[in-house]
Image (cartoon, rainbow, N blue to C red; front, side):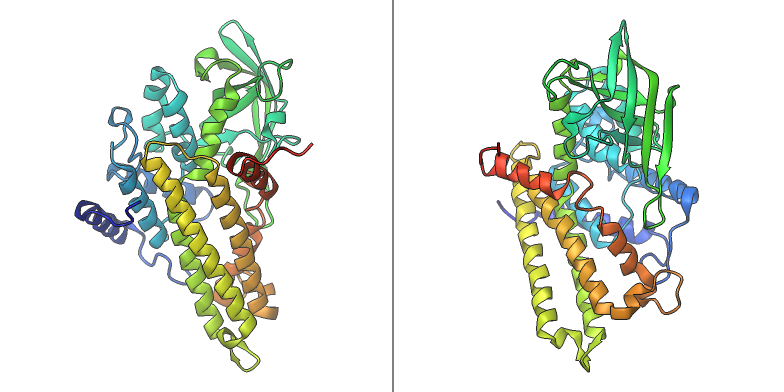
Length: 397
């Protein structure tokens, strides 16, 4: 593929940079800057997403008739890359934009497209994803949440877990079992569920970072109109694959930019850290570790280009997204583990301590990174996908 950009695309890049320079809060990314806490932060992020949308930077490749910009995938990639470069906060409705929207565009009815897509872009309605269950995480096809069709309604009963933003979400992409007698992949259906419906209970799950972005959800005789079925009855697995491939295949190029920034910051920290009386960057083991990070970043970059090239040719994100997910999740953990080793005893000091290195931000990243190889499909599942769907290896018996 041609990795250069046209004059028009470079002009668009400058437009994005100008917008971000003007609209990001004063002091953004400077030491000590903090977003508002809790629900004040949610209001801030809602306003930020509306400004992105009003300036034409969301739904860029979506059809214009549904509120999108009808722009090219290249422009969307440029925007995501510049957002990463500025470390701008992502849109609050990330699951709606990267998963619900593309799924509805691909499989939804005309009425569903008109009803939901514009509100996803403008952040009028926030989305969550109801796939994982206590005994069906990475093996989501083993889920047991039932939906029984009675007349023009589905009656839903069951439990979901690890549901990001369920505590503030307006709608849920819900995968349910509608045919208990069918093989596990064939008896599923995909519903769009109003989170204000009677019978839904949401309970937050506190993480070791102190946050509670994940939730448990319980469904007790929840009534969902049949018109909220996406795709056909018992065709939910096919629809869910679109959701998952978009989750794993989008933003690959921008994630490379974000990790390159993190890598540069780690190199800078190593230069300022004294090890055996010298800057840590003069230590051969430190240099070897940094070189390994850099090589992995280059692999991530060209894997992202390969995925993006496929999209430009009219394809959809495929199992190659599992390669990217596997690389970035494990790289992020190794990077933060390395910083903890680099800080030595100071690695035990967290945000709030006057002696914490760089206000304790690396400690937070270290704790949060533990989830990376679990969320959005475990590393074990990603390796199975790569083995079976990319390399064509036989399934183990």
